[in-house]
Image (cartoon, rainbow, N blue to C red; front, side, top):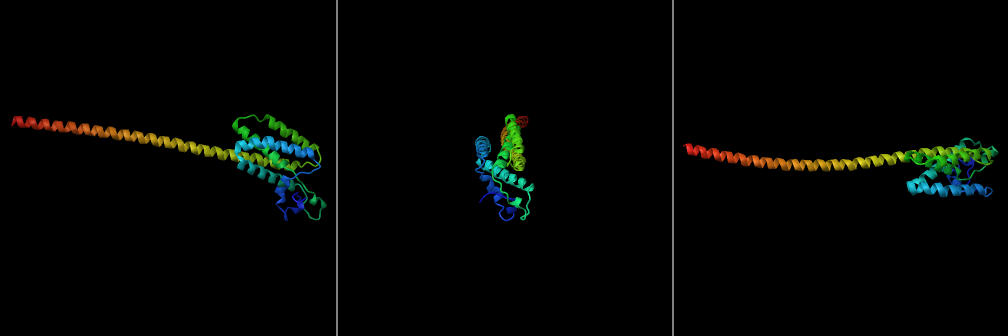
Length: 212
């Protein structure tokens, strides 16, 4: 209860929007098992792909998005007893990680069929099982997909800039080499022309001396 989130506590204890994603109901052992298995499989894959900092950022943002989306569908009037019904669980963040894997794999040309199947199964379970916050799943998935798309776009832009800098440096190096070669050839031609001009001048002076 210390970390669970309830709609009526949103204004007085807003941190519960995030802390609720780090707790689970002891009455739902299968829910805990599924989330831990998903974090171990999908989370490890994403962490290796993105690094721990970006992975943690996606997890926290999608966990928060799941809680906020769930809140949008709940009563918030403190006089309403339903506004004090708590929610816990990391399902919003887990669905966010699922969506992130789909978006990244799609951009990288990797297989996304198994992940789509897994999400479809869990969507069905979310609407058929009791005490499952499908709103949190939806919000986490949407924000997870958007976050992954933004991360991919930023990384792609950064890679393009690095390649442009690398090729630009090569072009400048090549241009510098060509300029140095041109300067050397020009100096050589100038020297040769000067020598020939001096020889011609000396020959002309000899001829004028002989005629005199």
